[in-house]
Amino acid sequence: MAGKKTKDGRSWGVALFGLPFLLAGLAVLVVSPLDTLRLHFVSGSWAQVPATLNNIDVISSRGSDSTTYRIAGSYSYTFAGSHHQSSRISYDTGSDNIGNDHYDIVSRIKSRQQRGTLTAWVNPAQPNESFLVRELRWKKVLFSSVFGLVFAGIGAFVMVSGLRKSSSHAVVINGVTMAAPVYSSEKNSYWIWWVFGSLFLLMPLPALIDLPAELGKENYLILLVLLFPLVGGWLIWLGIRTFRSWRHYGPLPVQMDPAPGQIGGDVGGTIELREPWRMENPYRLTLQCLRSKVTGSGKNRSRSESLVWQQELVPFAEASAAGTLLQFVFTPPEHLPESEAVSNDYHLWRLLLCGPGKPIKLERTYNLPVAKGTVRSRVDIPTRHIEQQSTQARIRALEAADSQIQLTQLGDGMRLHSPFGLHLGMKVTLLVAGIVFAAAAAFLTHTAMQEGGMLWFMALVFSLFGYPMMLGGLFTVGRSLTTEIRAGQIRTVRRWFGIPLWRRQMELLRADQLKLAQGVKSNNGRRHTEYLHLVAEDQGRKIRLAEDISGREAAEALRDSLIRLLGLH
Image (cartoon, rainbow, N blue to C red; front, top):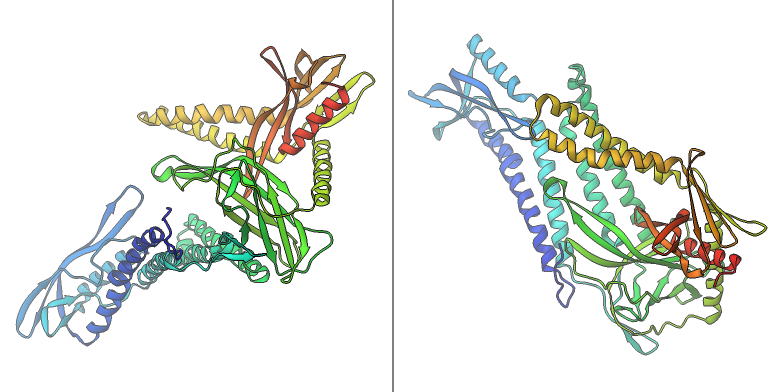
């Protein structure tokens, strides 16, 4: 949810977003654990009198996801010569599914009734107010306390973040007033890791307490609850790592110039580090244009990011009073979209900073404002640095292309070979996903044959996706492609696990026939990778020459090398 910020940096939209979480958490705390503890405290001085049980039972209510239980019954008692009846068994009045206390309490009450030792706790000031059982259900108290504290804590954190005044302010560099700096998303992210990590650690506590008893009943599925503290511990570790990096390197804001960045001009700026200047310059910056989109609805609603464009460079680093000043200038293509307001489908621009891995790995992520314009950056990058980095970038691209596609010069032409097993991890992931969907389709089909109904529709949907994905993944894992170009003729051989499947042929006479085609895209955390294919076009026909090239720079380097070696114009 996006909220417009005031001049002092407050965001009322963010604050209002956190308010329901805070109120819900406080309501749970007041209604459940605090009220239970209050009743337990005040009833300690009540009178205990003999009681007669009329009826009692555990009432279950089955919902869409779970079954809840409550104790219902009535009893009678005499106090100060007056006869009373009550249906208030214990402190709890609602339904829940925390532990097996309901059946245990009913069993103890029936046992006391049979022995003639059943008593009720009666309020002397109001004799019609009483409890048949005066004991705390610690599992429920613990669970509701954790639940309420976590929700209230999340709401309070979000509201404080929204209402906090921004520390950003304009600065003056060399007599020129610059816009407010852009801080990285890691500025407060460690708190988010810690909050959600605590949630995963604390929420399963009642189940963990009940774990020995459940294992005694041979309920081994209860062991799945151990996944929650594992995930919680991992999230807290991520928070600790982010906090250590933040504390070691400091805020590292980006001072943009121009601000906002310009599509059709420059996206530039500076970042000042408290690290001493290094000759080897271990810093890398990646500028990304991304599309963020929400798909699905209800419980299946999810947000994903896809890469539109990205470029990496080595910033110019020079010594400064604080340590090291990084300077950078990107020149993005004019056709790219500008930054958009957060919605179900919008574009954003992100800057990634990577640096030394020791003693603590440096990683920062910035969301930059970028708009259409032609303003150039006043950041002055030395020409020698630009030329040096351009040369090194070409070398890295050629090395990346050579490590993926085998390019061999023949006596009268060239051979390209896209080998079996190239980027095997990505392909195996696709295959595994296909197998999972296909298995789900087979299971749904089998179930639909017995029960019918909407299961047939679900089986059809999973089949349309699952089986093609599985077959495509299986083909992709085992495929290879060999291309020979001789005397203006292209000949390709497609193989699957070394078995020839088909051959293609086309004429190649001009450089503009060689194009890059988009393949799949993947992301690992904040890193996005695009895979491209080198194709040749002639009179509407296309033939693939090389495939699954990771990175546009490597693909472009391969295409340019092939044009040069073949002498195409």
